[in-house]
Image (cartoon, rainbow, N blue to C red):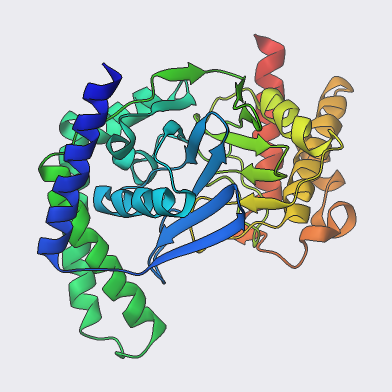
Length: 353
């Protein structure tokens, strides 16, 4: 059975490379080697392309993150094989369900795909039936808009180069979704946490729902001091809790704390998109900020104080000065007040269940 899957995966690789060459669009491929066992690969210079992490372990190669464009994933996979001198892909880990992280899963169909239990439902909504039709139509509209915008940009400007790269990606993504696309779902699912024993590496997976999607996870590889965190919270802004997500935020903080408070060294944090950055210190401060709010607001709620009391008590300037130079407002939303409201609502709901 496994050999049949590998043959099928090879056929997919050949077909996407053929389509890629016919399209005649080649964005540069970049690699960052942290050491002999950890490689980060991405495509493009200006777009928010996915930065795939590859781990060369004793029991096989583990890949964190696929992308939207199969031909990009095929190039990334080939680069990983070349760098490591092997092709024994054991696992692909999806950090959440969004199409720009999972549409390329089929390039790794010969590996075991792992994700949070909410990933399949999210993928089905975006990548099958009417959801897929809407996604393709959306991309067609975006391509038309970007092509018009390109006419009015200075050719040597960063905006021009970004838009040009965006169009090139859309020209690959649309036909790939229209033909030969097979949604490839994770077959190994977990709810709160999971450990993959890879012999010389222990890959810890933790649920981090409530920040970006209800399927967010964070991955920690203690032997390498590596954290991979998907799209949760970039370095330049205060973390943002999504009110509409009903994930148990106490679990999110418990899991985040298992990494930050464990005493184990964190050397590098990888965000999924190549143009995003998250320092080790900010990753830790994000946890401290959210955990401080959670613990403090829980106590205020028990004391019978109000939401307005909570907003007055916790300010960025007084309580969280680390973030005062970062983005603390978004589309006229005070993110700190928003987070206080979101946490208060979760605490109140937990008391009424």
